[in-house]
Image (cartoon, rainbow, N blue to C red; front, side):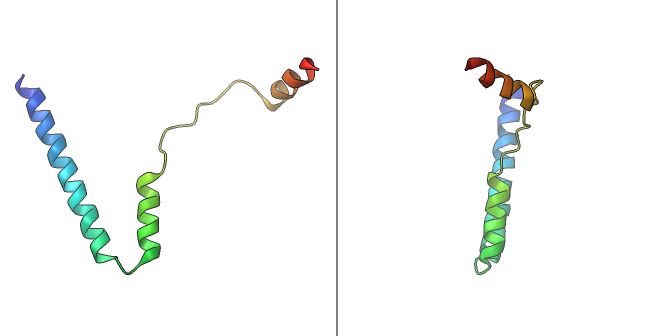
Length: 68
């Protein structure tokens, strides 16, 4: 399908643009370790939401108390 190939080209172009942008940032700040570490931290941070649980700390305590 044509739209699938178009989407693949779009993703490749987006990836190439992102790579070029980050390479430019890194090259311009190669003598600024704080900026580099902050940039890497932003790129590697986990953005997945933390699942919320209906269990409370008391439920956790009761689980272990009841096991004894």
